[in-house]
Structure formats: C-alpha cells, structure tokens
Image (cartoon, rainbow, N blue to C red; front, top):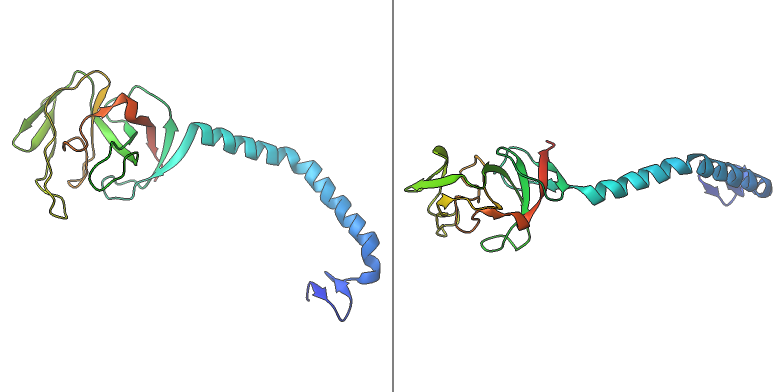
Amino acid sequence: MNIIDIKAGTLLGIPKHELPGRSKDILRKLFELVRKYLWVWLIVVSAAMLFQHYFFLGFNTTYSLPQTCFLIKKGLFTPARGDYMAFRWGGGGPYKEGTYFTKIVVGLPGDEVTRKGRDFYVNGKYVGTAKTHTKMGDPLEAGRSGTIGEGEYYVMTPHPDSLDSRYFITGWIRKEAIIGKAYAVF
C-alpha cells in the first residue's frame, strides 16, 4: 500500500473525507505520547549533557596499546603507577599540537629514570628500549634520564613503536598537559 494514493484519495489507507476527524485523533494521540514520555527525553538529554561535561570517548588509532576505545574522565587526578592517562601532545613529529594521547603511567615524581645505551629503567626496573629511527627512517632522539620532578610523569606503552617518554620529543608529561584518567573500554 502506498502512503499517499492520489487516485484513491487516501493517506495511510484513510479515505480523504475521513481525514479531518482522524487527523485530530492522530494529533491528540501524538500529544499524549509526547506528554507521557517527555520526562524520559528530559532525563536522556540531561544525562547526555552531564556525561559530556565529565567524560568523553577517546580512540587509539595506533597499535601502541591493545585497547581501542577509552572512557576518559576529564579533570586533574593524581596519577598512580599503572594508570592510563590521557594528555595533550606538546607538538612536533607526526602529530599536531594538542592531539590527545593515552599512555600508561610508569614513573611518578621522585622516581629515578636511568638509561643504559637506549634501554630505559624506572627505579631500576626495565621499561623499554628507545629505537634509533622511526618506521619512516627519521632519527629519534632518546629521552632524558634523572629524577622525575614534581608534577611530571613518565609514560609509555609496551609496544616497541610507541612514541612515549623514551623519546625526547614526548618527554616527561607535565601536570598541565593531563586531560584526565582513561579507562579501557575495549
């Protein structure tokens, strides 16, 4: 059946001459449905606004972490070793300044970062090896060693191609660059 059948003069199968009374019934039922479920829509919209104010979804577009999607809780937090942290990239290399990154916190203020050749250690524990060149052949400068300062964090991922604190271009993440704590979704 067509929605509008011009030859038969119907709308949704209702003859034209019956539409004026039927349209009032339809409008009345529509108004009742809106009135009945308006509170549901208000709750859904309010929840979405609250969610957006405190959280957002971040997506890992590389293979640096096994997870692809992260729920990121906005706002400062005190990172602990092993936390996922979302932060703003400082610029340089293949990424624009302000790009969101998610890495794992492995070094906290006061921790000692040491380097033997291109191998990095935090408090004596091996955390990774810095590569000499990118996959594209560009040289990579190894990151610094020393005592992590107040408000700074050493971040990394287990992937050998991760652009993390093993490299000078990333460095230690300052508190001001932190977006929030990230939670792996899948």
